[in-house]
Length: 359
Ligand code: TXA
Ligand code: MG
Image 1 (cartoon, rainbow, N blue to C red):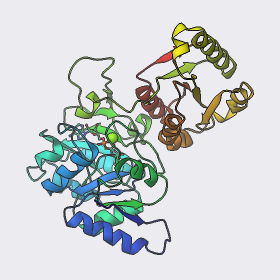
Image 2 (spheres, rainbow, N blue to C red; image 1 turned 90 degrees about the horizontal axis):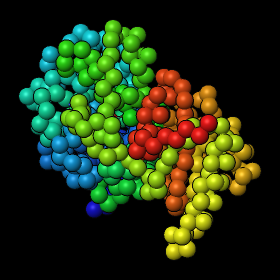
Image 3 (tube, protein in one colour; image 1 turned 90 degrees about the vertical axis):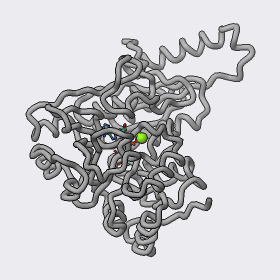
C-alpha cells in the first residue's frame, strides 16, 4: 500500500487540509501515524475492530498487548470507563492534556481487541495540538500504540515512523520532533490503591502532589518471573543490535575500561575470524571531549543537568548508535531524580539491565 505523507508543521501551508485528510482516514477504517507530545502513535478508530486489527498487523504486535485509547476531551473518559473515581478526575484535571495514561475499569462499549480482553482500559488525553485536532475532527476515540515495528525504539520523529512502517499503514502525519520523547506515565486506578505501571513524562514526584500514595510496580522480565501487572511489560523491549552496557564511572575511567576491552578483543583468538570490532558510547555533552581525545566514537545525549533534552533525544540517539554498526555499545549512567528516573528506566531496558560499576 502507498503511505500518504501528510505534513502538519505549525503554520504549514497544507496543515489544515492534512489534519482533515488524517481524520478522514480514521473515519473510513484506516490507520494513521500521528504525532503526540510523547512519541508518534499509530492510530485507528477505537470502536472499529477491523481498523484496530490493522494496528496489530502493521506493527507485528502480539494480540494480548492492549492499546491506549486517546481522547480529545477529558470528559470523554466517562464514555469509556466506569466507575470513574474522583482521584482519576483529579489526576486528569491536573495533568491532561499531557503525558499521563490512566487505567480504569472499561465499559462494555470498548472493544475487546483494544483491551486485549482485560476488564480495564488505558486512557490518555494528549497535549500535542495536531493530535488533538485530528482526534476532534474524526470525532472518535483513537486506539494508538507507539508507531514503531514491535521491538524497535519508539519513534520521536516522522522519519522514524517512515523507516519502520512505510508501505504498511495508510498515512503518516509529519509534525516534527516529539516534545517529551519518552512514552506516557501509566497509572492504574482500577484497583484499591494507585499503581505506577510505567514511569514516563509525568514524574512520580508530580503524581504525588495529587495522590496520597503510589505503588511502583514497574516490572522487568529479567528480574521477575511472575505475571506482570501490565501485559506490555512481559515483552522484550527495544534492544540495540549490538550488546549495550551502561557504565558507572567518570569519563576517564570509562575511556580506560573501553581501551582495555578493545585490547582484550584484539588479543582474543576469535578476533582473527571477525571483522574489525567497533564500539560507540552514548555520552554527556560535558564529557564528549574526553572521548574525542581518546578516538572513541560517541553520540551525545544531553548535558548532565538537562533531563528534558535527554528524554527528547534518547530514542533517536539509540537509533543513531544502531546505525553505526558496532559490535559493542556503551552508555554513561544517567543518575538523578524525577525525569532522569524515566530516562534511566528506558536506557536500562535497552541494555537488558546491564550496568557495570567501574569506579
Ligand atoms: O505515550 C504513550 O503512551 C504512547 C503515545 C502514542 O500515546 N503510546 C504508547 O503505547 O506508548 P504502547 O502501546 O507502546 O504502550 C502502551 C502500554 C503497553 O505496555 C500496554 O501493555 C499498556 O500500555 N496497557 C495498555 N492497556 C492497559 C491496561 N488496560 N492495563 C495495563 N496496561 C495496559
Ligand atoms: Mg510501544
